[in-house]
Image (cartoon, rainbow, N blue to C red):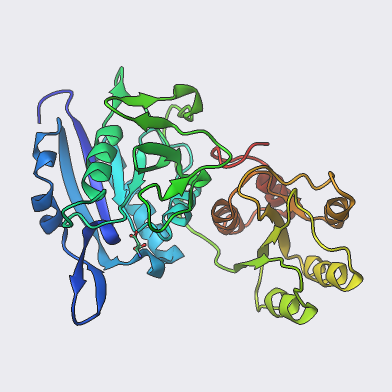
Length: 344
Ligand code: ASP
């Protein structure tokens, strides 16, 4: 490899980008990466050294689970010293969850970890796979003065680079599958890649992940809707071993004030279940003191998740609950931004 040439590790996990139609299974299924490379000959001309590795089992990301997030994070940690950047090829369906989980597991990155995928497979005549892949590799290898330009977990899709733990999948038919409602893009791509440096995290001097990499899966999501019943709420909050719940509330973090509702939540809090208040709104943030309906929740001990996405909130809880922190410290960390996932 010529001196100064960057090296990028591509980790293939599955997803539409590399899928083909399988008659027997009546749908798209992932295929092997060497077939993908053959379909993108322009990769040969990038001025960076590419290495490709796959997960043991290629999946449609609807089958994603925390154990695979750990496998992805471990692969990055094991190979960290040998590459300048990492590109993860992933299905779009749960990409925002995976990118959020990896951002918490691998806090303090000094190198880029870029997730990408596609709405149409690389083998389709008209597709978004080729440009998403090529540009992600270009961004993963981009350096200024020997330092990575985007040293954080991000999602590159349809010519926009977003912070991974701020992005959401919002579109299943058009190419602009991801948006970040509460944080501006890290870069936009036209003829040139235009980085917005003030939006990109500053790296620490060295990357030191908290080992062992682990997540606690004893959490859940409870979405409020007009008409939610006590039975429905109890069935979720009575789940065995439940340690935390992301409560998707209305607007600025508001919830009903009926006595049965407050009593059901109080019962959960008394069992030391952490309740993290996330808004159902795509933009704006939870402010538990703004309306009387939200003030009550604050008094009860719910933790406001500010402008976080549900994807970030649930994976942040999984990460923090696995650290076995004292309760005060756990609550404090939930209210702080660990890696740019929320505005404080
Ligand atoms: N179902 C696919 C997946 O998430 C969709 C995609 O890749 O866009 O794996």
